[in-house]
Amino acid sequence: MNSDINRPLGQNSQRPSKKTDKKTAIRWLLPSAAVLGIVGLASLIAFTSHQGFRRPVPEAPKPQVADVPPAAPKAEAASGPAGDTSSSPGNIAAPQGGPKIIVVGDPTKRAQDPRTAHLPEQDMLEQSPQGPLPVVAPDGRRPLDVYARPWSGARGARVAIVIGGLGLSQTGSQQAIRALPAEITLAFSPEGNSLGRWMQAARQDGHEILMQIPLEPYDYPRVNPGRNTLTVDAPPAATLENLHRAMGRITNYTGVMNYMGARFTADANAMTPVIQDLSKRGLLYLDDGTSARSQADAIAAQQGTPFAAADVLIDSTQNRGAILKKLDELERIARAKGTAIATGSAFEVTVEAVTSWVNEAKARGIEIVPVSALVRDPERG
Image (cartoon, rainbow, N blue to C red; front, side):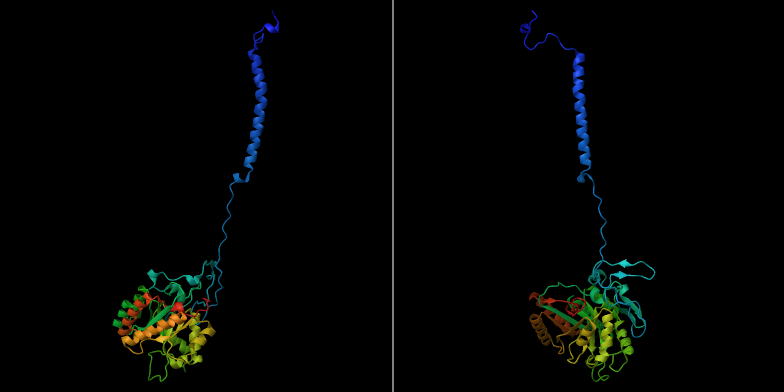
């Protein structure tokens, strides 16, 4: 019987051939492969064109140039050309015949490395007939900033103590440098001996230092500060020559202070060339505060010279108890107005009293700072 009803369920009367099966598979596979290829190609194009696939090329960083005023013209000393100097920081140094050099950062913040604090910075020296003199470096660094002793910058009660007369006594100089805390500022007398050796010892121990300048007192020459005293009647050129003779005795100091000089500091015409020269060289002037007639404060303000004045002379009476009372007075002034400055000399009793008092004052919250920290400085604002 050939009727479909008699066939087994799910079976055909004829079995398809192998050739027919292959042809059918090929007809289905070719379109499918083509579709998959098109989809893959489109995906690849979309992926490679995506921004995330491309590696961005970094931009070269722009050079940073310090925002500082240009260097001032080179100055001349009254006695003749004084070499290359500048009275204000600059951001470009242009050596003759060479390219400009860009200086990045604030040059006034470049303090000297403590390990080499006893050595002068060569670009801050002017060789003169009176000896090596401090000058502002070509990049604007001042001796006041480079040779200054660092301090905390805190706003509590601050005291600076300046002990002068270093170099006059070999034993006294050695004792003062060894015993006095490093925060004490030391001032050197141009009349002293072995000043270079004592300067280096003081700097290696961490002291900030000043140079004392002999100025004419009343009753001069009966009262005589020493050789090369600056006098009221001398012409400006002679005044600067004697000033430089004293300044050339040592290096690495932040400024100068008067030795005597009540008559000289009271004469504005005599004082002005001195203050001008210090300003040009990047130095401070400390008035010892012993003369109420001194014109130094007003002249320094006019000339833009860093200035400070002492509040207390601690050893006019060379007695330990009297010195300690003066130091207590210094502390009261500091607590009342925030800062105070004292001056004294390197007598044995003064050194001992100051050393003892400083250790106790620190425990009471008084910070002992170098004198450079308390100057009125137009460049610092």
